Image (cartoon, rainbow, N blue to C red):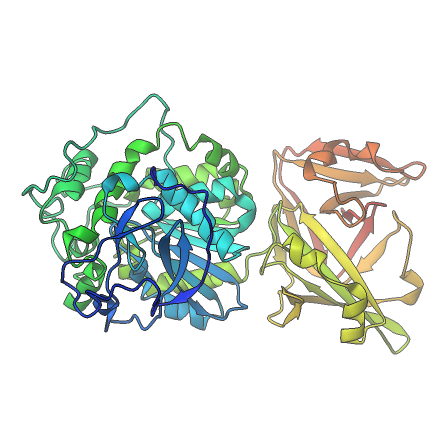
Length: 575
């Protein structure tokens, strides 16, 4: 917010909906009475929607929690397994976290911790009453501070509409915070610094009788697209008209927008739930201001796109096929697929019988797709992971259980560094514990051996059982550049046009690096691999080469793979 000092004194406290110290006694029992205007220490005037307005909402049994940021409460719900993989759901305009009422129970039942946040001025979050107290960068910074306050990490993000414009900027500026990203009918616009896309709204606090912007769209939508071709134009006006209508139109209310931009007619009680945070116009500065924030994007998203253009972790797009706005086009969806490297090779979809607010139209199906996508995504190039090997002696052989983070998280540094191998050895009754990480995967796509659904916590690091490996005691402790046999069935694909790293033995055997390790050299990075030979003490007759592939390279292991490690613990598989 332009006038809010976002040097946040994160007087962070997670509070229940019965937040007593700042409750609004004058209108707690009347949703429509004149709201009490409160003021932050920085002079921001705001109102707070009475709790009674949120009673008995359909499919919404959730109790709100709050983070206080610069004297203004940011609301969210936190459901599901508190130790499960984290899903962060971000809504757009003019909705609130209720938009996810069909998805939250399915994701929670799927074992996830689900957080759905209300942007400032929306839902149960506090609502500054002055339009000038809302800004695009303000929303961005508040989301960053929210994530830091709750100490969220390895975030599986689902974002739509303005949730995408805010969420993708945060992800681009902080890519390490996010494990996977799914975008639905949203984007992160790049606008030149010297360009203002639309005229500024004159007299924004004036209320005017304007034609309903979406009045031409029937409750049961008709098809607007055939494949990627617009076959019917709803003739609802351009975005400049939408900015003006949202800001000044006397008939503007959230439920009518959600109703217009869903494929099916909304039930009356669901429509009322979208209006619940905004009993009078005094509460509506947030949703009114959102469209006009497009004019604040000029020249400020370049840095975020630097991060997104290097985002190798999984990035999926799920699109409503009947969204008549610019965010519904195939071009908008494809531009994300083309520009974010983590989008390559994923099953991007356009959903039939779904309009802009696809969470209402296809929420159950989307949630089930997210469970599958967030649960078992194989390692991809650039992913950080860790493994813990628990070795036990069984019948004159060593059997090691390999517990790892692939598909669950990206081995957060603080969690990994806090682990004590001696404590793990004692706790698990192992003869030896090998801390194998952190590592970075160098294979573009991986298929083959099934990842187990058996989980184990090491401290606060969640792992799953990856494999059980029998080791001949005579092979234990072998020196670098010595072959080892690993039981597995896998197919590794390295993409043509990309760089790979190979060791060649004196007899001509070639080994391709599959994983880079920071176990020995914590400062080693993927950018060092091109000239890694300068850091290796290669045995006589061995060579190290970095080369760019002309076509895909596929390494197949059918029951057994032959691998070696260099002295930095980087792992290679024989071709």
